[in-house]
Structures are given as C-alpha cells and as structure tokens.
Length: 322
Image 1 (cartoon, one colour):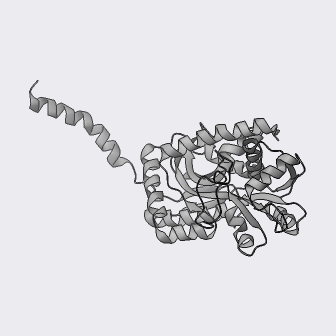
Image 2 (cartoon, rainbow, N blue to C red):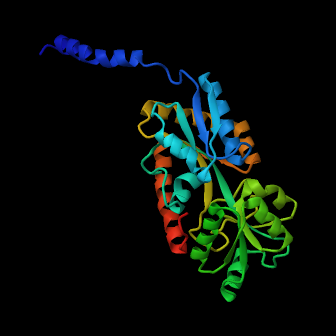
C-alpha cells in the first residue's frame, strides 16, 4: 500500500474519534456537587469547602458543598456510589467512611474498594495520644510498663470509632490491656480526661491543639509515622517504642465508579495545584490538618491497604458490627 493511501485511510479512521472529542462539552459545564457526610462547621466540612472554593476558581464553575450527615458519614458516600458517573457528583472520602466504618456495619451501604473512582488525597489529620495533667506517666514507655503491671486497670476515654480503633491498635502492638470508657464524642471525652476522671484518650491534633497548648492535656505521642509540624517536639509512637504503629485520619476526593479518566486526571491535577499554595497549606495546618497530595493510584492503594489493616484490628478486638 502506498504511504499516501495509508495516511488517508488512517486520517479517515481517526475522524469519528476527533469529531467525538470536539463535540464533547468541556468539563465542568455546570455546577458540581461535593457531598460531605458530616454537618457544617466540622473539620471535614471546612476542608471540603476550602477545596470546593479553589476548584470553583480554577474551573470558573461552582463546586457546591452539600452536607449529608448520617450513618457515621457513610450515607453521603452511598449517595456518591449511586450517582451518575459523569463528574458532577463527587464525595469527600475520609478514612472513617472508606477504611474503618464499613467493617462496623452489618448492612453495608457500598463497597469502598469497588464503588468509587479515587481522585486523590487532600489532607491528613494525624491523631495524638493524650493524658490528663494529673496522669503520672509522662511517656509511652512508662505507660506500657504500668499497663503490663496492671492489666486492664488503666482506662481511656473513647469518643469515636476512629479513636477506639487507634487504641485497640496500640493494645495489640504494645501487648497491653487497657479498658475503654465510651463517650458520645471527643469533646465530652476530653472534659473527663482534663478533669482527671479518666487518664487517657486519643483524638485528632486539630480538635485538641488548644487544650494541648494551654496544658489542659498532655501529648504523649503522635499516632503518625512522622512528627507533626503543629507539635514537632512530640515523638511518634514508633519513636516512643511501639514499632510499626500508625493511625492517621485523612480526607480525599472520590467519584462514582466509571467516571471518565480525563475528568479524574483533571481534578487530580487541580487538587495538586490547590495544595501547592502556601496559604492553603497554612489554613490546613491551622485546623490540625497537613496537606497530602497523591495520585489516584496511590489513593487506591491506601484505601485497599488501610481497609485490610483496620478490618484485622476490628476482628482481633472482637468489635461487633452495628
């Protein structure tokens, strides 16, 4: 076949694809919904609104945050899973709704490994192990020694599933037995810990940073594999002697399964641009979050790895699904 004839046939074959691309409307051509599984004003909501505002500017199109609280944040994720895969419904996927919460539900509303297209990480919210000001053991090493000497006698206040799981992981990794005292939330738990009625708790850095700075709570260890820029003098759990320990909350963007790769790639790149801005980084640090950009593939791997990890913690601890 002559080269000129081959090129003519190739051009004709590519014509329908080129026409389809040309006829595809630019994304986004209308407002985009970003569903958040928690009420307005909370840390996750603040992060979502920050990202939505910046995406609105980059796209010259409105990204609207819609709060859909319920079932520990999982109601909103079920709505994302069922939405059309056209890029106009996104979800703020957090560690609690993608890797821990599903293990604690008898009737699962969605499959976190199969029902979403990961777009990318946005930020992480490291947790921290805290003690009341009157607790006499000021290091994790001392706590572990005492807990081994008095199995089950040292109590901790548990204000949420994520914090309960973080302490269950500590018990497993350190080989100790601590007793859980349930509370309706982190704020209620911290009141009793500050008052000395319960000696220990875990919470996010953002939620308790003011109490830490004023000495009402004492930080024993960051539950991340790296130190926090908010409290750089506080050791990690591994540095404190509990090797292989990590319990980090995080937020990400996800879309319904089947969302076109071009849309996913565009949003991922725009999130990267947003998180690279110093003013955004500072805003996140102010509320106890750290910027955490990732590729869609990296987010997919994190969801899978963390899902398996926390599933094993739930099974080992004998926690029952609700």
